[in-house]
Amino acid sequence: MDITNRTVFIAGATSGIGLELARRFATAGSTVIVGGRRTDLLDTIAGEGFATAAIDVTDHASIDRARDTILRTHPDLDTVVTMSGVMLLEDLRDPAHFSAAEQTIDTNLLGTIRVTDAFTPHLIARGAGTIITVTSGIGFLPFPVMPTYAASKAAVHAYSEALRAQLDGTGVEVAELVPPAVATSPEHARRNPRALGLAEFATEVMDLLQADPTPHEILVQGVLMHRWAERDGTYDELVAQRSQALAMLPGRQ
Image (cartoon, rainbow, N blue to C red):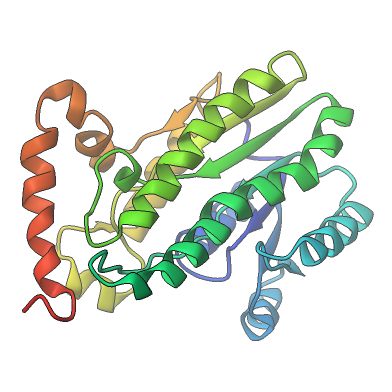
């Protein structure tokens, strides 16, 4: 895809990967609308010259308001990125985990579907555009301390595949961004020294997005071990390694 003249809405871009990609699209020459729940962060981001939109992906009315505002001010919108997500620890031995599971599914899976549904009619009417969903390497290689997060991202992968098939012939393409662990802050980098640097990740993503045709899956080098673990015969070993992190859950010490 040509990243130099797009009009891009990124839902969930007030920090981390979403904000970095917003800046990269803008630097390349695209117009970017940053969406998020926290109005204080949106105000700060607006100071960088971005258009902003308040949006809560768990709330249909909030999504509809954001869509109507964006399409009124940016009727040439051609790219939607569904970045919003939460990562919550869960101890499946404790039934109290269910509230975290509900929040995760509501945000990561249903939030993706809600945002996609809100903008798909507009993109189809244009006859061209791109939807970029965001999954995770954890969707292909579970991290047992975040079971519902893994399940939600695996579900978004399957949904993206089906969405691509259903939109075939409309001119609307569907790409799935699959991040590995990315150090979105110095604290994150300290906690996970293996996490990929944010700038390095974003550079690789933008390079991959510029391929023609746009890849169905945006896979940086650091996520390939997750994406292809089953194919490569390393799945069981890697899940066992990652299961050692269960010791970090309260009550498992």
